[in-house]
Image (cartoon, rainbow, N blue to C red; front, side, top):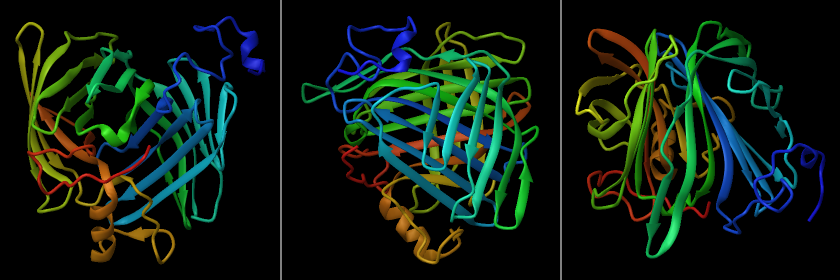
Length: 345
């Protein structure tokens, strides 16, 4: 037990220092995530990660995908024994400039040729998802809290000899804390849609046989409004052949008053997608080219999840955003082409 600078703040919620948590579960994690994309869907940047206090580990990642097939995926890991107001791991830095409103995201120059300096500016209220609790075989595999928030971005991304301004790009973030044993989760679909005056947040979790564990979400408006809560999310997905990438979908949302919202999704650009799972380093260095069949085959073998940037239509409105699919654990019977990847995280 070590007393550290953050322990001087009156923010404890358990009789242990802030470097510890009230659970001894090794999968207890405190995490954040950001996605950044233009309003034409031609690129996608995601970054995030977090800490596992009981394992004293910090894991951070950054991913960048362009419509022409160029792709970067970077990871940084280190031992972490304390909390601080600034999270720095390897070349990545995440700093809260103004709680619930502004963050600074920094990737320092590195051997990949990809770097950025970006500011997140919230454009809508937080969406507080209901707590998520799932057991499997008598063991807790998920017990966590989650928020989502929509934003605009400013700053720039550098890749090779090119520089891209992200001023006016939109997207969002999430924050998650608690137990999440990734390798035991069978399936989820996570949604972050951005329209000009509002955002849609949503999360659906199902078991291998399609039993719904959890569904929640709703609208958050730039005018500060928050909608009724979704109690049902029903997606019908067309995948891109036998790959793990969604090509199109219809998503039915039903709120607690029974009101229905039907959203149509189509891929913005075939290759604007980022992948999560086992490391997939490009053999020829950065950037990887996902037009290459060998890279596509490697991704199909090793990814358990992807964030596909989609074009969304709702009641005449058009927007863009993330459609994330995840399969691990025992797999998911409805998607036989999406075999689980076994991890220990």
